Length: 317
Image (cartoon, rainbow, N blue to C red; front, side, top):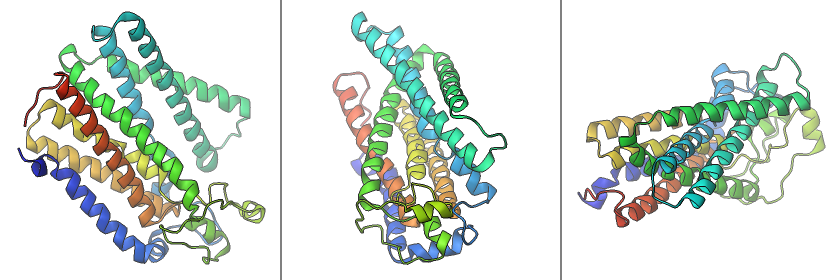
């Protein structure tokens, strides 16, 4: 199979995203004005679709890596690929990382709960207790599910899991590095005053931009200048790593196409919800998806190359 055919899905998705980036470069503000459902003078939209995905749109970046760490945990436990002392250290590290990941995911969930849903005001102590408790519960659930994987599938899923973990790390690191450099004002930040003079194109650098006390007093949040790129879209785009399953398991083309379409639709839904919320522009969500897709392409290439070289994965080309 030629290189182009093996990687056609990447080229197609990148082409669509690049086209979206070009459109957004010229019409970002107009698109947000047409789509965003935020009342004048308000920071948050009350649209239920937008609110739901603001609360849960980031969850793939916590769920999939947690499951992946669980699979790696049980793969090491059941294999003799490395010696016991190192195995114990790695298994412990996987468990700790998963708990930390789910703790932070619980922190974000409770944050959005407090903003959009909260009926009962939670004290800081109660929030921390809930975050720790939910972190442990979620980790237990994901590791339990990972423990159900049959031994004959464990090695292949461990390869997929490595791709997930590396993709999550690279994509989220890149998002956190880029956001403060560009310091782009969110649509909803400018919506508070109705003054859109602070609008900047995605490629303009605005290092050090911070929300003013006056804007905070109007109801803005401290993340008002972190529009570019979209963290939610980048986090949701972790589902792209599910495309590695057909590659590693050697599934037929039909299943590969279905999985690819499902991941693209899932990312599009979250991306659209972020524009609807007034949190991001088209270019923000596009670049968020591009960063994760690029991280995935790089991670899959590196992991599969190493696995094939070590004889862990059979060559199919």
